[in-house]
Length: 436
Image 1: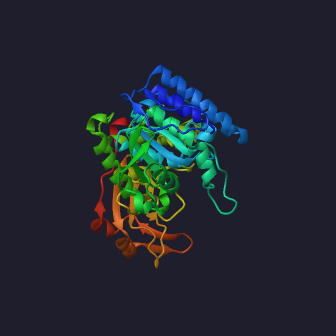
Image 2 (image 1 turned 90 degrees about the vertical axis):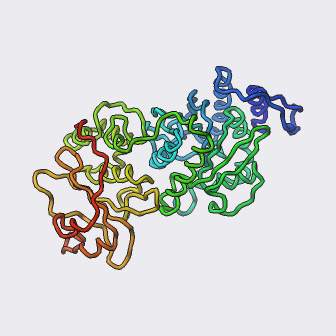
Image 3 (image 1 turned 135 degrees about the vertical axis):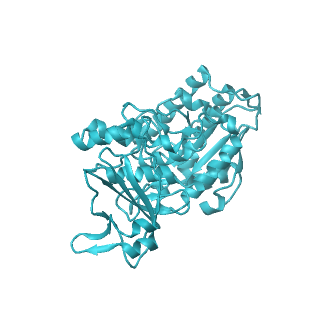
């Protein structure tokens, strides 16, 4: 079997001694000494393992770059497991959920928000414990012949990659394995827990014991971060519930940093998700610089922090969505649909930001259908000249319906001044003016 000798090598490394070795024979259960954490020998073994995986996977993918070895990942007590390599992330950057330009992908930012709730990160620049990440299948399965998205790995592909996956797990020896998405969740649980399920809902939100050779782990299943926006009412609460269970399971002493203070996140030089910054300027300083110069370097930094996702001419809208996400948790959806943030509580929030220059603007734009409720909360935000938060509100869809007006040629608008301001709830958003 391809890669089988790597399992034996990794078992030796952690002090496990197989009762049988030999081609064509299946190793019996092992007796293990106490698990080791990161050592220099372990790093050498991982490098050899990654080199063999790359030699196999790159034979059918000329664009595949070698997987980078991060020693800090070997200290992780948590492993996250996806279904296969993504087309534009680790395959081209060498790091999971990281694009070729070094920034986290959209799914990576969602994942990092989830990991931060129990003291971990997927950002190599982060100040939390870096999580170990791997996949059921060690190569990219290709795009679907019809429709959008990637092909699901088939049974033969999963079987072919299983020895390498098991070798990685036996090297790192995690206590927790987080299974990202239906394919990874159901396949892993069937193989290592003996659990047969047909849907993610059957297994999500509860711990599952699993055994890989001599290694006992606890597995949790959540929505894959790249598709979490498809389940706005489910993914946020599921992430919160699962993170709380993992935090409790690992124990408070395993958390590498204190809980994040929302009042410090929005404008801290370390940016979104707690990652360390390559630029000492605050978010608001960078926003002003971007608005003035449209500098590629400034945009890259704001995107890396998760403040901007697109290339807006004026970034007030995306910055407002960033602050709303920081306040309510959950994840950002993007700028195209009827709502822009799916909160941790499952609320669909449409966000609109206006940058005040002198007097207040006359109206907020609203993506609105009178006969169809496409979001739950409307959150308009007014920024001052330096992107400090002047006012912010949260307005239920039912209340918005009473005050929104349709103007010929411009669509639905909410007047900035009006009776609604006396009736809806003002909200406090993180705003560190001292850094401005």
